[in-house]
Amino acid sequence: MRLVIEARVEGGEARATDATVLAVLERNDLSLPDLGLTLAEGRALLAEVQSFLVPEQTAGWMKSQMACHRCGSMLAHKDARSIVLRTVFGKVDVPSPRLWSCSCAAEQGRPRRSLSPLCKALHRRVTPELEYLQAKWAAHLPYRQATELLREVLPLDKGISFGSTRRRILAVGSALDAQINRDIASGPKPVSGEQVRESTTVGCVSVDSAWLSFSSSPRSRNAARDLVELKSPWAQKIPQDRHVNIVTGRATLVDRTPRLYAYVHKLVPSAPARLDQFLFASGVAPDERVTVISDNAGEFGKAVDGSKLARGRILDWFHIAMKFKAARNSVFGSQTMEPHERIAVGTEIDHAKWLVWHGKGRQSVSRIKAMDATLLAKEGYEFSTLYWNLRRLYFYIETNAGTLVNYGTRYHKGLPISSSIAESAVNLVVSHRMAKKQQMRWTDEGAHCLAQLRVAVLNEEFSVEKLAVLTTTSAAANSPSSVN
Image (cartoon, rainbow, N blue to C red; front, side):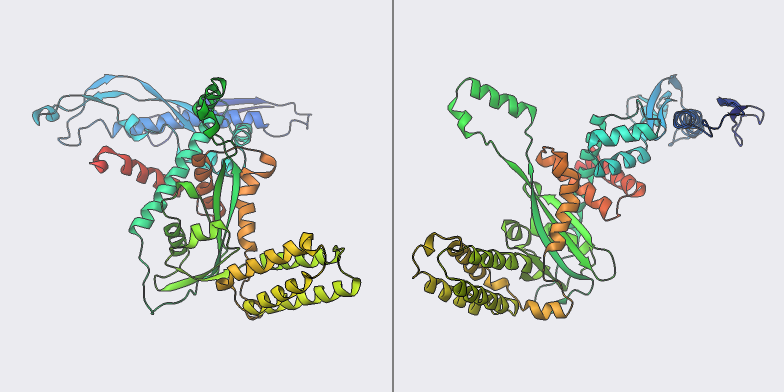
């Protein structure tokens, strides 16, 4: 069996009988192992169709660009050139003739120059679909693996590379970050005063952070190596174990799936403004406020202090329970107490935990301190694990007393009491792609740009149309006319 696939253009100046052979496939009629098209044949066929279709489209478009847009006279042809356009189905050589500008431009005092309409229209030399696939696949997979899989599925053997995928992520992530900054500058301002209410669209927001291994630039590594070889005293001031800090948050919505946001703290001018923009985008009105749950670690203050929309702050119950659990476990390993004393101390710790659960943090601290003072009379107690765990426990509760609430009441009302949703957001945004088995090292810019893209993909807010709008907006913002 012999299959001939032809293409014919209709509706233009080409005759209906003009046809181009795209592919010829031969099969053994009695053979089933080679059933249908193979992956290689499919890639080759798609590449041939693209190579046939794109020049036909651009040729028709160029005919509409041959007249001057001022006076309507035809433009003179200067020379014939071509450009390479990267598409989803391979690289295509596209004719791009250069034209002389119209003489009416010289009458207005402008020099007569050559112009290339197709080069101006396709200045990025890549289609939005290819940019979208590169960005979305790289948001889930390492750059090299995403590139190899795209090459295996699509005819992109020479169309993309590992380096181009990484540059694509940096460009798209920077565009997403710039859009967020524009939204912060032009977005609504929160209403201050007493006329505020609890948000009806966002249940709560949880904030957490993650740390990634830092990768310095080649220039920095070479400079550090030279300083070490020269035995310079400046070599001791070079930071050795720096990490990249990514702040991640998740908003629980009433009528939609949760939304995520993430950023590298070092590259954000205002973390509270970033949080407010995220809440506005999630549906929070200027006169509404949202409860924030966190473990009160360093990222809590960095991300929330100064926010106009984050009103109620709650200490995560999970971290409280873990500290009580550590103290209770150390009771049974203590060698300074009798069995009946261990039972009594364990019961006392449970009572203190019950007090915190019902929002009575000060009473719980007093009870733990009294128990600690009683145990100090025992010889060797101050060297035990129980001693240190009890001290950490009451210091933690005392320090964060302002963020303790009645967890039992919130739990029975169905309200969140734990920041586990933020920790799962860290796993989803950061760990699954940037850490764990990937064993990757990151720069601040690379981690920040990938975090913006990955959050957009996970929120289902990334599409070809969104990418086209971002590209157009970024080009307009970076143009000389906008700067002037």
